[in-house]
Image (tube, rainbow, N blue to C red; front, side):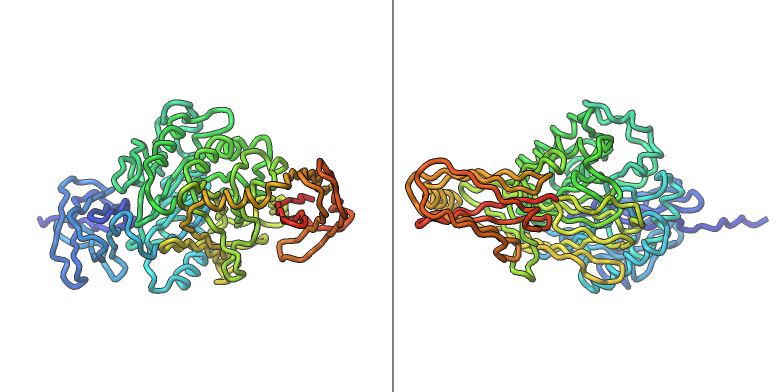
Length: 534
C-alpha cells in the first residue's frame, strides 16, 4: 500500500517582520503542520541559499542573518521537500546603515481591517501613487482587525485582503482597542507592569523589543522603537495608559529611549489620538485613553524633540498645525502653543520650520489622525471635525492613507484619498542655526514693548495688554492667515505704562481660526498669534 500524500498549502503570508541591515524574519502559516525552509538570494532566478527549520508546526518563523546592507533579496518558502509559495512579489530589501541620509518612504494606515472594498481601494491608491518607489516602512495605527482582533478576523480581513503586498512590505504595528478585545481585557492597565499581553495580535507580530534595530530596549512587544536611516520611530500603546491609571513602565522607557535617540527625525505613533473631533471626541470626559496619552505622554514627547505623531481611532483624517505644550482639552489652548499657525504646505511657501543648533528648543510637533483606511465616518458620526489644533479635517465618507517622505532635513506628508486625490500636503524643515543669537536679537528688538494677549473663546474677544517703557505712537493691526488686514486701531501718541485694548471678533464677523496681530510703535513691531474658537 503506497504512502498517503497530504496536501500542503500556505494559508497566511509569507510576511516580513523586523528587518535590519543584515537580518529579516519571514513568517507564514500552512494548512497542515510541516517542517520549514526558506530559499533566498540576490538573483530571482537563483535562490541558492537555504535555511531549514526541522520543527513540524503550522505557524512558521525563520530569521535570515548575514545579509548585505540595503540590498534586494528574492525568496521562496516551503518545506524541506517542496516550495509552497514563491513569485515576483516575494522579495525584500535590507535596511540602510542606521543614521545614514537617504530618501525614506513611510506608508501609514489606520483602522483598516474591515475586509471591505474601501480597504482594497486605499491599498490600490497607494500602490498607484508610489509606483516603483520602494516602501521602506509600513506603519499600522491599530484596530487592525474588526471587530475583536480575533485570529480568524486577521486572516479574512487583513492577510487575505493584503495578500499581494505582504510578501514584500514589512509592517510595524501598534494595537488598538478592537485588537485588545480578544486579549485578556483591560486588566492590563497596571501602573507598573507590562501585563500579560497575549492574543492574536501578539501571536502574529514579531517586533524589535530588545533594541535589535536601534532604540532603547523595551523588553515587551506592547511598545518598542526602531531606527531606519536617519529616522527614529517610537511605537507606543494607548491601550495601557489612561488618565486614571498611568503606565510608569512605558513612560520611563519612553524617557530613556528619547534621551538615547541621536537620529535627525523622530516619529511617534499609537492608536488613540490626543486631539480629534471625528468619530471620537478627545474632549469628552469618558475618553480616558486619549486624555491619558495627552496629559502624560505629550510632555515627554515635547521635551524629547519628537517631530511627528501619528494615530488612528477616529475614522477620518485630521492634521494639526505645529504645536507645543497643549495637554488639556481644546478650550484650554493658548495662542503661544501654536508655534506655526500656517498651512505648513510647501506649495504655499508655508513649510513648518524647526531650528537645530546652539540655544534652540525642540520646536513642536505636527499631529495626524489617519483612522480612515477602511473605516470611515458616515452622516451623523462625526462631531464636527473642528478641533482647534487641526489645520485640516477631511470630510465625511472619505477613506485614505498618509505617505511620509523624509530626505535629509526635509519631511513631507501627503494625504491620499482612495480616489487618488491628494487632499493635504505639509512639510517640516530642519534649519541649522545658532538660536542664541536669534533670541538675543529678538529681545533687543522688542525690549520697549511687553505684550500679553488673552482669547475669550465664548465671546470671540481678543484682550490685549501691552506695556511700553517710553512715550510713543502705537497702532494695532490684526491679520488673518492669508495676510489680509481684518482690523486696525490707531491709538495715536501714548504715554509710557500699561495699556489695554479689546477686539470684538464676533462683532467683526471674524471666522474661527488663527490670527496674527501686530503692535506697531515708531521703533518696533511686536507680533503675536491669537486664536478664535467660535
